[in-house]
Image (cartoon, rainbow, N blue to C red; front, side, top):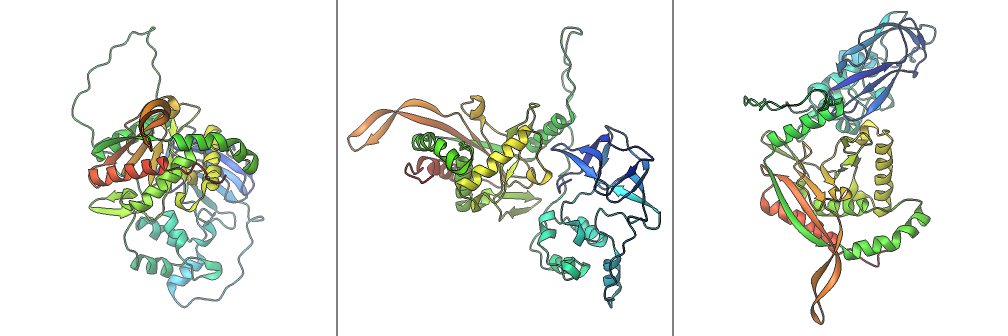
Amino acid sequence: MGESISEATILNWLKNVGDAIEEDETIVEVATDKVDSEVPAPCTGVIAELLFQPNDVVEVGQVIAIITADTASNSKEPEESQKHSSDEQKRDKASPPLGEMSAKNGQRGQFKLEGSSVNDSFLSPLVVSIAQKENLTIEEVQSISGSGDGGRIRKSDIMHYLKNRKYALPSKPQPVAPKSSYNAPPISYVEGKDRIVEMDRMRTMIADHMVYSKHTSPHVTSYIEVDVTDMVNWRNKAKHEFLEKHGEKLTFTPIFVEAVAKAIQEYPLINVSVDGKKIIVHKDINVGMATALPSGNLIVPVVRNADEKNLLGLAKNVNHLANSARNNALKPDEIGGSTFTISNVGTFGSLMGTPIINQPEVAILALGIIKKRPEVITTEKGDEIAIRSMMYLSLSFDHRVVDGFLGGSFLRKVGDELEAFDINREI
């Protein structure tokens, strides 16, 4: 379900008790606060028991169904490999991969929601248990070189990694701040006249996340105004040729992401998370872009390693994520792991905004609407009044670790990148 997911809701069982199933056949649909997913059967067999019903909320790791394995289809044993000298090696070798049925000879096996999206074939339950205990992220586990057969990660590999690990990353959601003892004033309404709408699951999670962010981070917001005339003129001139040449639409978003990535490279302490008294400086620059869903809810797909992509690469990535969001087709690994977020409030006609930080990040940038206005500019002839495309940028930052100097300097750098856009840039 992705490393940041702690629970999911059962949406619909596609199979009933007694139904025969094939390995990799979809048997249940589940939903998280971020995305809906289809869960395939881990083996061929028969549904013996369903432990949860539609709309039940299940914690990651809980058993949700019992499957009786088909011994005829699941009797292929791996070839006998060389025996290992230690008990740890024997146990690690015999353990089934994460998410795989452990039932053999007709035994009933447990089918769980797994909280990992790594290549399961190289992870034993022992390794998964250690990784969960030590709060290892999915990316960290994937980065470990396995010394077992076929690159399989063994206990000794993960223990060696932990010994040389520089710092621990929090992989579980932070606890929600305790509720205030203040009694909220009553809300009056007229039955039959006023309409009551229950928050859906996603809106409830968004509300909790926003309240948690305001309780956790002391927010400060800074503003600047930037002249993006050259950027707008270049994009208007280049968008048709860009589409014909590369088959991709050219919006302003990849240009904004590019400017943010460059500014983070100069001010890396804006690309951090807070873990108690520790500041975790992220090496990867993963830019989340707040996106409205057809339902009206909000989601934040992520442009990973934005600093390593050129404008074409960013445009492809942004377009893919935006289209997937509109079609409710985002994958779990496309909506997690952001280190900095942008929100284009100008899309809705807003002049500027005061965005709430997307935890566990420490800053978020809002981009206002681009409007043409008469401005005083300095030319070789002196001061003149000209029509310019102007835009407000606002940066909300966590004052626990980001002071005014850092926040202001970073914001000014983003503005400088947009104002200094090369009007002769190649398409």
